[in-house]
Image 1 (cartoon, rainbow, N blue to C red):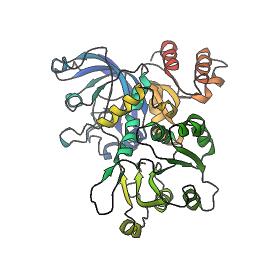
Image 2: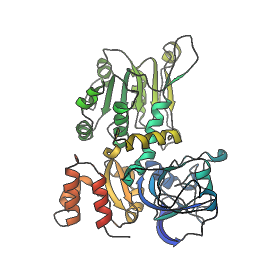
Image 3: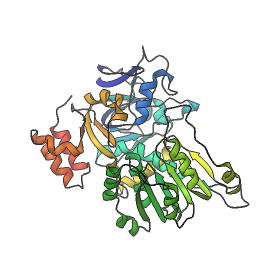
Image 4: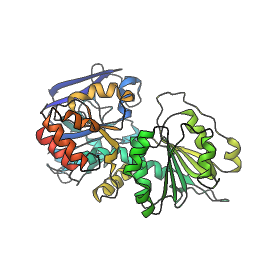
Length: 420
């Protein structure tokens, strides 16, 4: 099978190439990738190369396919898995395999397995660990968003609390408690808002904090305070950019009391320290953001750790159960992580987009791997539509969908874009 894929050869060395995949073995599966969203973790792996803990040392001679937020269809199934998986089945994966203690993961570690490709081979360990997951939704892009959404779900489950006199940790945020998301209007923050107001375990107060007014306004238009109120959540959006004492103001929103759960969605020292100051008794600081610096540090109040039982937790991705929960919530229409997506592109845009990811504004960059398309912001569809009928139609579709990417837009794009 001939494939086109973006492979990593070394630090900042990504290449779009065409090559032959070997014939699958009895314990492998051949798959056709349709969509893959680009994660900041892929950028980190790209700039670190073999220094990254999941990337092999020999990528200069044995490059790996990047991308781990992918969705596609099974094409051919090896004899070992014929009773469990069938050709034509839509799927997504949980890339954190944790196979026999190894850190190897699709999108980081395999020469023939990654999302930035047209066709790939799924190795035995993906199925062996139960991380090849059937996806029954219509839109492929939701399958690509299942993995980042699972990271959000996992973080909510990883937060924990205790009771005085007990050493048992109660997992999850405080139901009916006060919760804040700092730097919460970015792409992953939007997913965190969605989950907080629509999942079965909700806070009574949710405060979303950011310093970008445009992002806050977009978030408030998608996840309205009225919709949150119907679910029993008082939702507040706060821009702290010009506040003289943002911590005091945020505490005042909870009647001066500390928060039960505070999530930090950007690796910024001042945010971590503000989150620590916001914690109430038994409050949990959830450090969600993954820093690129290995020496990233911040100060914590250990007086409060000792006397107020405050604590900190961090997660790096979700697990299989988190991903299954994400898929179920999307399939039932309970959550809609389409708000994360701000850009659309083809496989030929992956290299430049990944290398420049921190400098490209907006949220998730969604790639359709079988088309050629310059990375384009959804907000630019109308302007490009003045000279390109395809973008004119896409602009019309997303406008009818509250400015969000959707199934109709995906189907139109796949039917009309240039094949790669």
